[in-house]
Length: 302
Image 1 (tube, rainbow, N blue to C red):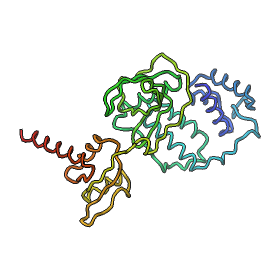
Image 2: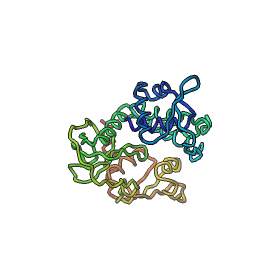
Image 3: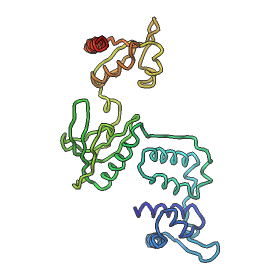
Image 4: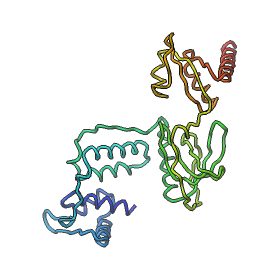
């Protein structure tokens, strides 16, 4: 977009004493003529840009027109770049990489040369995830409806939404939008979406509340769970629920207490522990687990 390029050019000019039009054209992947038009646009906006011919010449901003670069520390710059790299890990394009190059240009005094933070937001489904994110971002920018098939514990359905935010929360990506079917804002998990496509129907942007991503909203709970786990499972309980989710009993086992979202998810989760977990309550979960165990025994006796 032109506005992104103009901001990028201004950033380079503020960081460097002089820069040539060919250098800017190569950096922003446009023609020299486009760069000249962009420079004219910046001049019309009141930025005192000057040019100097000959050896050592180039494009520069008049002395006295400077932004104090000390507002950004080296730590600030490293954090910004770490964030951009994290987005690049799920991006289907080179946009964020190019943006990093723009920020790094002329900022060597703010960079230590060694990264202290590396973030990879990609998942095992990166090949299918990146195109979804790119398509949703296009829909948000162009204000066009999205349509897709959605697979949830409650069943399969076709949805049409007005997309407003791409959201990353605890290892999963979501889109937040107005669902035409439910007539309300909903959070949809990208890995549960299929046949996603951008429609040709535009929508008027409505007042959009920022999604509440607190655990109480995303994982509404309602099922009070108590279970005993073998001590060698401690690492997993801490990883998934934190160090305060259990108490050690006299026999060394871990008494786990929490609220779970729905019964099917609870049963599936408990089964991943094999014989290292015993549900104390609710009684309904105990009965369902026993039924599953009996069914498994029948399968293996055939």
